[in-house]
Image (cartoon, rainbow, N blue to C red; front, side, top):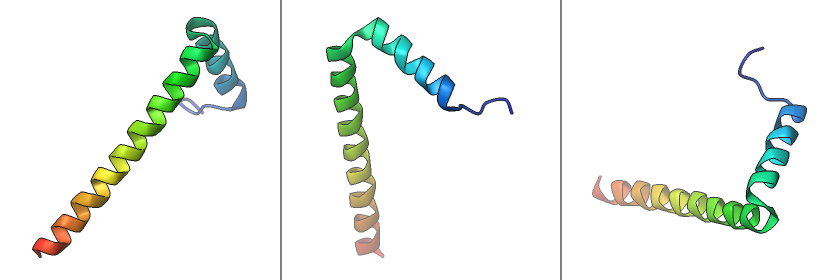
Length: 55
């Protein structure tokens, strides 16, 4: 099925990313991505609470 990633494809992508960025950069990238997702979820939650108070 086109467009579906399996375990071998994901492992290959991670291996290439590790070769390109190196372990320390990859860890920093993961940390930054996690913080970004957390901030986005927090902003969405705050937006929903603000909308409920206005109604």
